[in-house]
Length: 330
Figure 1 (tube, rainbow, N blue to C red):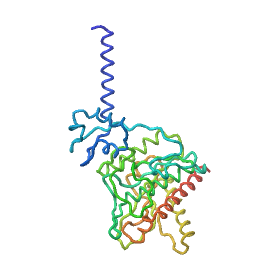
Figure 2: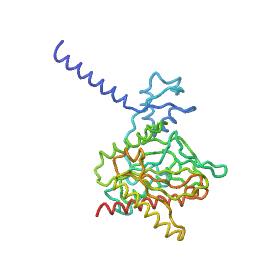
Figure 3: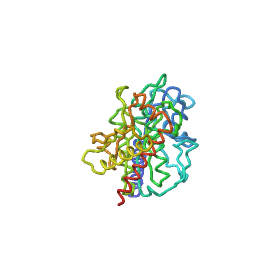
Figure 4: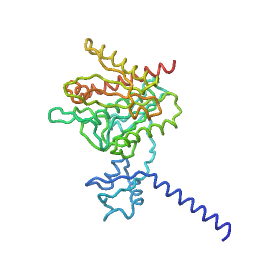
């Protein structure tokens, strides 16, 4: 065998290895009952003919007659393309709010990673109001989107880690539950540890590439306690982490000040504590974990079902970040 021929075989072998490696790195998922290729791909933020053609090519031999999906078969998803984004445009906010204006430079040079709790196969805590169910993941997601938009209008870089391609920012009191949420396009695992690890890994991966020196992550949840127990907003920080503790205390001070202004005499009993939570321990950027109220309590429920209240929560969280950023820049 000639040297030239040997080199050619070597390069073909290397190319085959690269191609095989790229396939094994791709995401895989099972279809739901009644889903065709279009709906299946849309669930993972992959829309359009290009994705469909690539999907069919990747899954030859697994598809049914006329390219139907078979239940119980795990299909390979085509890689999620980095679609060019319009300037000052975020489709996750919904059609009416997708476009936004940067109105200040308060957060220019700051980078945020926003995570709403649970999502996908896990709705989180479920409260009841009359005949309606209140799902934690839907309300946390709506508040998270509102916070993201606020941060963007102040000049920040923002990553929305948990995403739903359809919902957008909603003003209804009762938000319909779905299982569409993904971790930036990747299916959310059912296993709790896998789910938490996935979002932490995503944040850490992005953070390694981001050049901003001020990076903050927030995990937004709604608590579940006895329906008779009314609570305020609780803030948790990473143990023995001064930057995380300062951020949590800044958030709490902001909320206390806002309640004193808008509801004088009410008082604010929210607290700041350290907690050995998985996401706080495994996230590289300084982070804070927020519980916005008791989803079982009729008074706390008003805090999340009214869209004006959800917007107020997002506004105050944003102001807390602005204050923390100003302290950092001193």
